[in-house]
Length: 190
Image (tube, rainbow, N blue to C red):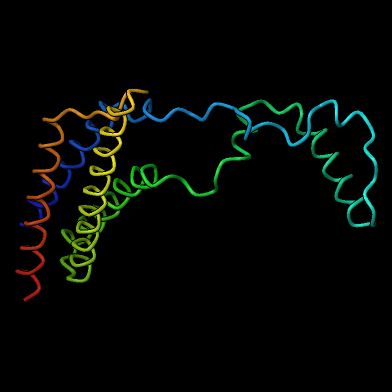
């Protein structure tokens, strides 16, 4: 039974991979265009002229440092300026786009170990990872559905799109994998 779950898990991963490749996720979120928030802190002309020095040594050092930074940053391309001003944390959809396949691959590795060794701990870890993967996948699907609804409303750029057959195939295979993994872990834990 563990081998059947392993094969089914591999089938689910293959369906998910083809779903990811056939989607337009890579084209749905372009890089932000440089705008007023991504411009250099000082205009080029301001760096060439001497500004009146503020009162106090700390303020003078800070202004000199800012002037040096502005002089150095004025030749940065817009993409580098946007990257410097971008938030440190990725948006939730990008995080889910990474975490769902990562959890699935790690869980598949634990299930392979369970299949080869029949250690119950490995089976339960794999089951926990498949449960987390299912939750992440449903969250990712919901986030993409909401983004598609918002894009349809705004009519801006194309929304994330997936082939409905592949979504149903991947979701159905994941459901059966989850159920069989739970059943296998329960039966073999006795």
